[in-house]
Image (cartoon, rainbow, N blue to C red):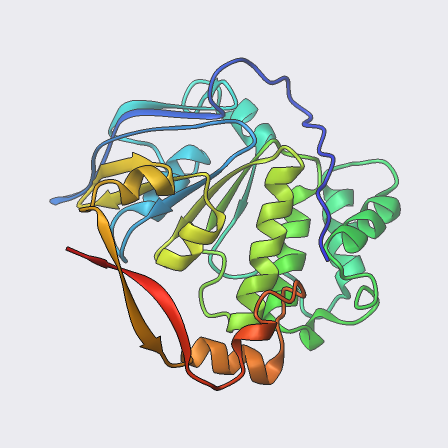
Length: 286
């Protein structure tokens, strides 16, 4: 199981949100991708930016990570302006893209040591061993990454992002293309980051992923944030529910985890996979 990490950011933290965005706009010729995005991300929280393909999620991340300049608006990360203090922003962040950026020829440990050396950190071997332990990769650390599963590669990728202890991490659709077990492995890793004090901005198009992980959720649609709040606050936007009793057949997800086991290891699915019909409640909208 992954454990919470005691992260000590290398840059001085300031009061206020870890990420502050106001009036962000970006166009590509005639295509207006962002039309005035506003959002705040609290320190040590997981913030999910939810939207369909092409909604502008990756564009927001690129602007916040100084890879792209906005046409209008302002953005601050860890208290630093992304335009006038870009170098300080880059010191404060790590970016994990949609595909794992790991060297398959090297072992997991060698990947971590390489990044630590590139960052000119002391004792890169100890840093690598610590991250392998935190991400439950110690036994696989001496194996070439080419032998890793998708979930293991993504966990290694996130571990590499932590080298240097950045206080803010951007995860751009981190579970795209992963199987159900690998997704749960990544979810555990993300939760452990926030428990250790790291601020996580997560972009995703998976509704269940945002529901499982996020302290706050914002929905980006047609270049604007159309709703922003906790899961409970968002549910209040719908009509009140009424309770009725129905016969529930096991879902495909129930069957899958009954056969292969719960990758999360917490056993919370164990009594749901009997194959018999259960009487249970569900909420349906008026």
